[in-house]
Length: 151
Length: 187
Picture 1 (cartoon, chains in turn green, orange):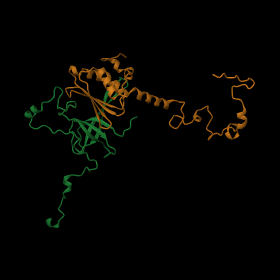
Picture 2 (cartoon, chains in turn red, cyan):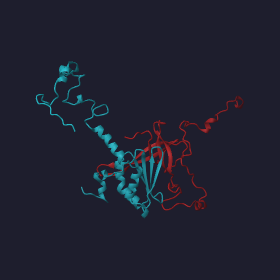
Picture 3 (cartoon, rainbow over the protein chains, first blue to last red):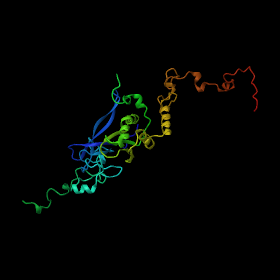
Picture 4 (tube, one colour):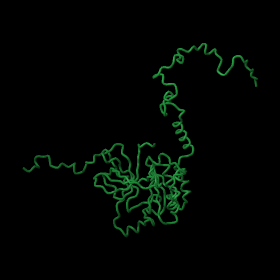
């Protein structure tokens, strides 16, 4: 049928212990042949997210990588669609809940600090960059000059 | 077995096969946002109840998901292959009009569907022989002349043994040489 060259999926981020990847739960509807009704079927996918842009509970768009990063990490986070507790209505672009749209001025008075809004688009998910490239690693653990050694 | 539940007709194969919206190949994900309460969301609720199973049945490879009670207004949000999005506002619409709108925007037209049907028929038509089809040559069919590479043809059927000169002089099949030709009238 359709080729798998650009396979995208929609799912919810679920807790995982991985350092550089997010576990995403994908629900698809599967027909039960006997009852003749569609039921949700859950499957899990590990998506590359080195900067920890996603929180647990976000609704996220996930795209299949051309080459697997590891045996488990086969996808990457493409875009955060609804961030948990911070839903933005795509039609109006305003933050909202199920009852109404939020008044930004009122919220600023009530809450000093609102959670950071990350869409996942601004971050560069640089695949070429090694996962282990940390700022710490650039500084040498020990000085290489003999003068600094205390012997 | 009695039909149980609210509108159990939805749970028949005949109802599912009645779906006539075939989404385009670029559409990969369809999400529907609606609320469980509210008059403006009634059409969306009906759409999910009555029409979503039909839509999913005809488009097995598309991921369909519903989100309840996230936003105050209902909408359908589709994600395409290239990363494009399609947003459909379904506020205060009936489920039939929502389905028509989706069909117009994202559904395959009749021309494309009939072309696909023809392509499928061509493959299943047993009269076609070739590398792409079910059988490569008529010699594979039992009862037909076997492949000459396996079983040599009898001498008289081989091209090199046919006397073409006398063959061409013979009258065509179905014509008696003793009965004279009828002269054709010129129009």
